[in-house]
Amino acid sequence: MIDKKKIEEAVCLMLEGIGEDLDREGLKDTPKRIANMYEEIFSGMGQSAQKHLSKTFPSEGSDMVVEKDIVFYSMCEHHFMPFYGKAHIAYIPDGQVVGLSKLARTVEVYAKRPQIQEQMTAQIADSLMEHLKPKGVMVMIEAEHMCMTMRGVKKPGSRTVSVAKRGEFSENDKLETTFFHMVGNHG
Image 1 (spheres, rainbow, N blue to C red):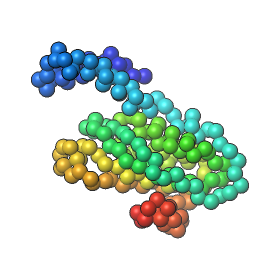
Image 2: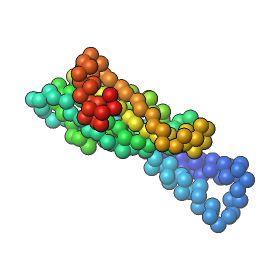
Image 3: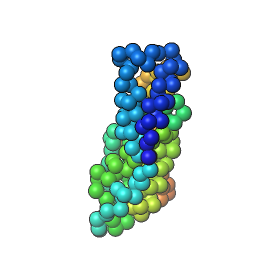
Image 4: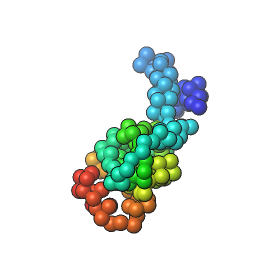
């Protein structure tokens, strides 16, 4: 549960810490705006992907299902700066499929919390394996990290790619190659 009052107090301290005047016209409602924003961008806190993955439909097919280019925004837990990009998910059903929007909602559950990309990739894959029980899952995330573009090394445009493979994707190189081909020849 987000404590908006604590967030407002923290923002006031931060603004004072950088030498700002809290009574300046442009900053008067900033702590409240940031608390409201944090409530939205961290709405994945306390949520479980199980909620989205529990409603499945019978399927006789066992061919790969791919949902690509799922746009997400997250917040790096190390610097509290945004990272954003696209997630690509593939799974091989084992008698059950899930609505396609539920894959995007699963990405949102993990993106909307303080996070690191590598962990988010694994969490999505593990959650799909646990709740959907497919024959295999592969997740690839491509993201730009503001902590690398605005500060530190300052390399705008650089993208980090992380991959998690579970089940048949770990055992079958052809499936992996097909996935990479389908999401844009990243393999």
